[in-house]
Length: 450
Ligand SMILES: Cc1cc2nc3c(=O)[nH]c(=O)nc-3n(C[C@H](O)[C@H](O)[C@H](O)COP(=O)(O)OP(=O)(O)OC[C@H]3O[C@@H](n4cnc5c(N)ncnc54)[C@H](O)[C@@H]3O)c2cc1C
Image 1 (cartoon, rainbow, N blue to C red):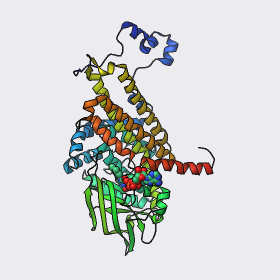
Image 2 (image 1 turned 135 degrees about the vertical axis):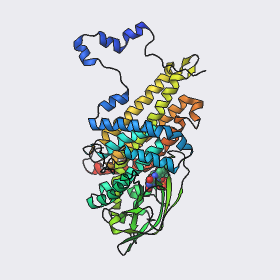
Image 3 (image 1 turned 120 degrees about the vertical axis):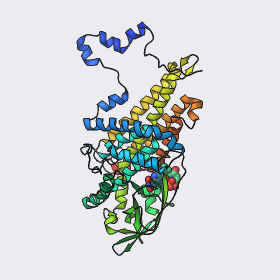
Image 4 (image 1 turned 30 degrees about the horizontal axis):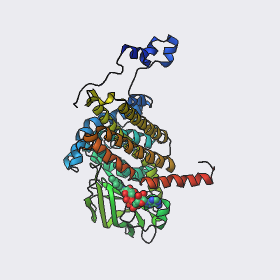
């Protein structure tokens, strides 16, 4: 066995060429040609061309950014994450590229992408697929920041949004990003804070006590993505003496006394993004840092997850696409019995199946993401079906690479570890299935349909 650099031609013989759609369409009558002839293009190009122009631009721009800034750092960061200099460099580049905030005004006051006419879940999904195809870990870091910004966008409070954006702009003017994170998970509540029945019996672990001019927060949050470097964290806490229905979203700034980043977990995938444990010991939060209204946090959390789960599906898609691209490079070059693996029909069938899976994932994501308000069922359906399919695709890619597929410095091995996490965060896929059923119960009681 040896490596070869050549990719097989589409057709070997003159007869095959004559029978190919390309030649057949070229030889057809002009009227027929006008209807059927096409120039072969990648699925990526075909899908991009189907988007409105600003979204085409976003997709191409994010792809170039990922190829330039994320992919070259992906493997090194995976092995040695949380290098502050590298993190600062990547985040600064994202800021300069206008890919840091696409939901709120651009913090540098430069040229914002004209994306306001499109649903947030759609722009975020397009961006996430491209970033994750470059590196699942860096993509999660930016996606977690977007999740942190979501309550600000959804709460509908222009004054609060303006106050926070003023800080982001001030940092942005100095070329520095203002990073946000989102903290709901607690030692005794993971799924419970993402699902109605669990929440009904859960005991809140992070409590807000009234204090002169604001609130004092005490508790512990786990697995906060980007919590180690975030400038501010959206911390969800219950009001003293009340249950989860009193949840309120508080913006906690990183240098507030009593607020400690305890440690980062050593986790299997998406390692560029830290999962941080946060400790709040009598942390003072002024009234103007309450996001939305008191007791509105539960609704904000559910709505934020509905908005974010489709983009999480897109993270899974992007990671799987990266694995497929790496696998195709491999089977086109790697020779077995004197010919590249891609010339074996079994391998062709597997590659075709992987591409079909990617296409199905993208169709699901784009279909649901382009709707103005994502329903819980749609968001969870996209998250479950795409993260499950993406793991299957990464497993197939790893199988194609066999020995090479298990090596730490292979993109496919990393993709396999990265993609597995998308079945767990933003609600495990079990919890997301229950979310689909929760909406189903409502619709059965309403219009009676599935
Ligand atoms: C990489 C990573 C990043 C994360 N980022 C963040 C973040 O930024 N912010 C944040 O707040 N959290 C974050 N999380 C936490 C994540 O959202 C939770 O870990 C997840 O929701 C699961 O919670 P848990 O681990 O407590 O599982 P548990 O709730 O303890 O569940 C254990 C098992 O029981 C199953 N289960 C639970 N309830 C039911 C039920 N009613 N019916 C059937 N099965 C059930 C679950 O599916 C799971 O398999 C992150 C986690 C990871 C791994």
